[in-house]
Image (cartoon, rainbow, N blue to C red; front, side, top):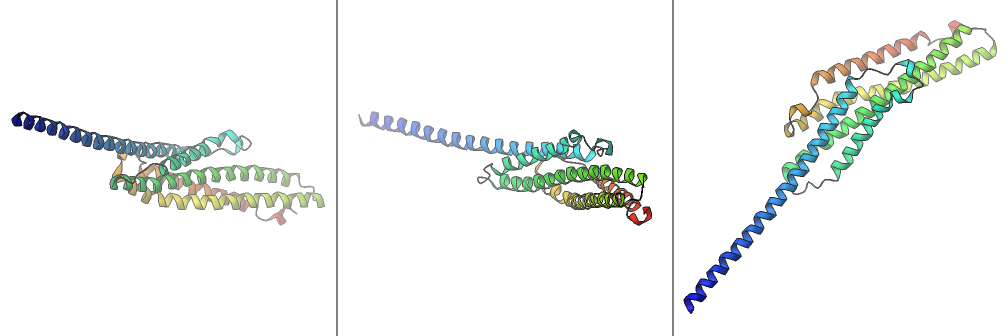
Length: 234
């Protein structure tokens, strides 16, 4: 009887060990799966953000002829809104249970934030550039009418003030945009160790976009200079 009881005890103990071991493996397996899912979610957010920013950087500037067409600028703002949602989603992901996941999330936060701000300034600078072109065109037309009356001069001054305000807004947005573009390589270098290079943006694309932005700012300044002094029209 004692022998039988001993065998039964050993069987029960083995079964208990198996249950406990299985539960532990199940727990750790589930935890690892959840962590992998969260990592994949973060990587996807980075990838989609890169795609949106790359699209915005290589896109042609909105033509002045579309000054009254809000739809031409809408895609830029839509990209910025989408990345802002990505950023909020990222910040709601629990990364407290893994150092590697936390490092990825931290780098992704910096990357998404920088991309969102670039997209916003890209959209704003183009909007102000379009507005500047439209108001400058109106100023040109007014100058050509040139009847030299008091009302003509007053209207000319007001038109010039609108152009100056547009240019000021454009310059502020463009300067901020170039500053953000200059900070982008650091943000991308921070996320680079955590994701495939194919998910990021080639340095040449960023450099070319920067050159185009500076060229646009310089061209806009030259346009303003041509109409800087209203006295020549009086």
